Length: 198
Image (cartoon, rainbow, N blue to C red; front, side, top):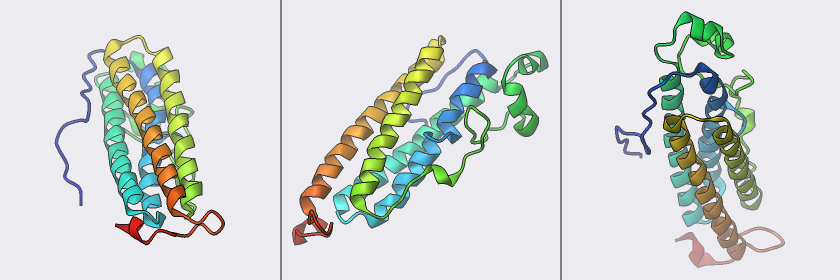
């Protein structure tokens, strides 16, 4: 059960529309390393984690990724609201506009729609946690790339916040991997400590 607060995790207050930026940033919504994939990955992987504290951490991080999806959606919305026809026509956002107007729709910057194949849930806790470590690094790299391309401080500031959260998630997954390895038999990957399920 989740409790929803009617506010963004970090404020997004963009004053200037920029369809070109929206076209790039939308990858962090529906791209292969975006926030939808992250939330779905972690919220599905938690069921096969043998350690409750690690499953709880996946729930926490997966829920936070939903909040990040909301932030990216707010950025996209604010970058594309009140665009003129000429602003749309003279930007790479025009092809998106044809199919979605200015509605928020999960696609990569390349225009490829979101696909669940972007997530991994193998059912093996060690494999899944390594996947999660890599996923956080790929998301951090995407945020690094976006921050390099953005001049507007109203856009750059929330992107920097989101990038930093990827670093924190990476650290939490590293801790979870060590905890999981400490509780599993190294040959058969099953629980050897009856107390760890508490």
